[in-house]
Amino acid sequence: MDTHPRTAADFTRISRGRLPGHLGVEMVSIAPGEVRARMHVEPFHLAPHGYLHAASIVALADTACGYGCISSLPEGATFTTIELKANYLSTQTSGVVACTATMVHGGRTTQLWDATVVGEDSGRTLALFRCTQLLLSG
Image (tube, rainbow, N blue to C red; front, top):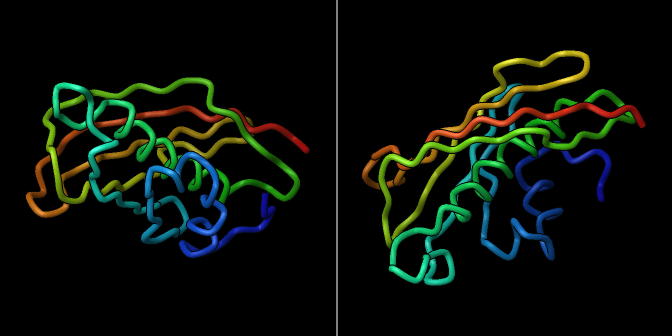
């Protein structure tokens, strides 16, 4: 993996051939403490009952939070997710879902990120997501 991705384009590039790339996650912006991403809903994002699969939303939110963590790591460090939680409030079956992830805590050994996933056109909140990252020295 590129050890110094900095821009949204860098993160979109390193997603190719990995889960975020297969799901069509597009990075919109990477700034200190905030990441924006989006994903066009395709039939493979849906559960058998026809609604957006919970794992699709988790993949979008966790990717945004994880890339935010990567962009703020100290030189030579890496991370792993140690906890995540999602609350689902609504769904959709087509269109674009957008995610904004923000760092809540940036400590020496952990980072805490919150993300909100919305329908891009409606602005309706689909899910609230929180994850904790354990920072590992390289």
